Image 1 (cartoon, rainbow, N blue to C red):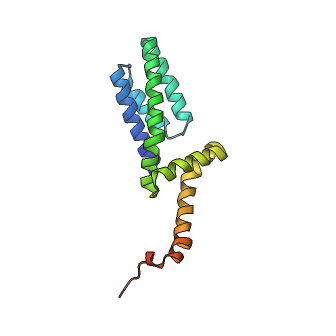
Image 2 (image 1 turned 90 degrees about the vertical axis):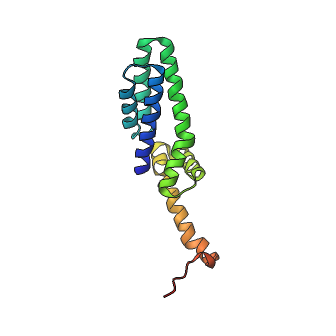
Image 3 (image 1 turned 60 degrees about the vertical axis):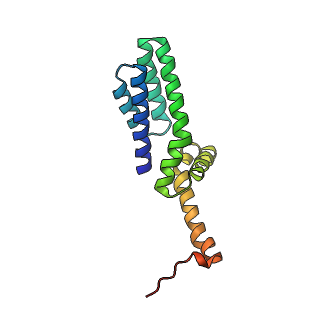
Length: 146
């Protein structure tokens, strides 16, 4: 949960800053809403994207297109860098393990699979360490001495 909140804060900062640089009215409010709505995966991002494009397109059609490009860029950065890095740190997994577990979980079970993918991968890795790697490699077990 903490990892998802950190991702939401990062999204709010990226989009708030980007919309401000583009000159979209109410950019900081839109960035805050984007961060809050990002707590709900996929649906929140789509709703915020559509809402922001409508606000920007009312100023100018080109600004609406630039806003769409900003959201596409943000989604790419979030999916490839922010989520694997932040969620990986919080569950002590390598970012590639997080990325692949999200891809596999989302492909097999859709949205529910993507939600449970990282905890499931973390549990599998813990079980593998406890019951497989330690018995094979006794050097990994730290012996406590009195």
